[in-house]
Length: 388
Image (spheres, one colour):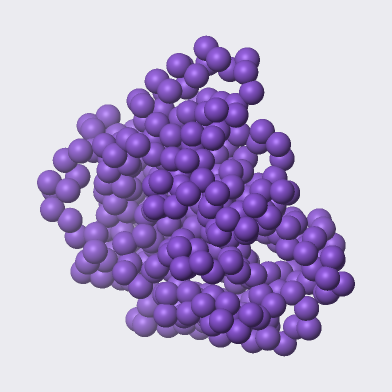
């Protein structure tokens, strides 16, 4: 049984970090804040953790400009993006490997480690919190490598770092730890005192463990207990790669731009398993433009915070349990016996699926504030009907 008082939220003061003054949201345009009306032709899409604000104007302009030379291979614009990402984190181009979305970086990192184990004649396994983002499991199983899911902690739904560590230590071979932080679908972060400390300890002991750290939602985190794995790369640790994406905060999901950050040697090893010219010219140009667009990135963050407050205020009012998300989605409780996803679809709102064994929970993407106002209206109607 989950301890609702220990961790879940039901009370107007619970999310103090998001009790923000109106001026904080001043940059959110009226067009994004205006309540929308979902229809069958234009449903509200709150199911894939996309950024409903749409592309930044700077990104659109960069795409239009880049189209004039789209008949050329993307070497120059791709190299510029790699340099821009490196500079953004105070690193060099040699620390960056690009992917066709972060999913390719995850795949390439796994394949590089499987190849390493095969060359050394070692067994290999992948371990990960469960549930989590499923791409690593899919690639692992396709490669015929054992995938070991480790259940989340009962009371908090946090990753059980101690249990993961025990699985790694008990294995006679190479262990790859896939670790999404904040985790998807929970939105919960693992503190640096637990996870990062394990990475550093493993590096010091030269343990046969490699960490694939997925920080797709890292830009949203406000919890000071979180410290990006990129800080470990800066310390020279070569037992990890950190994957990130332009699909979330940067709103470029359809352009498929992801990347990995590691030491020069680690990034090179991962890059060897990525496809050649895996970044299209328009996507790379849009990513560089958005990365430099501080006004848009501030707006993107503020819009997500406002959307989160709209939803959590409603959850608090209705007494619906939810997790303290550090991402652009919220994992919340639903009512047993009610097909919540189907009911929402009937109202022309698409919400995420359940993640077994948490079948009476739902992952809700935070769309624009206007979209979340429409969601809340439907949610309150569901309460009247006894569906939530």
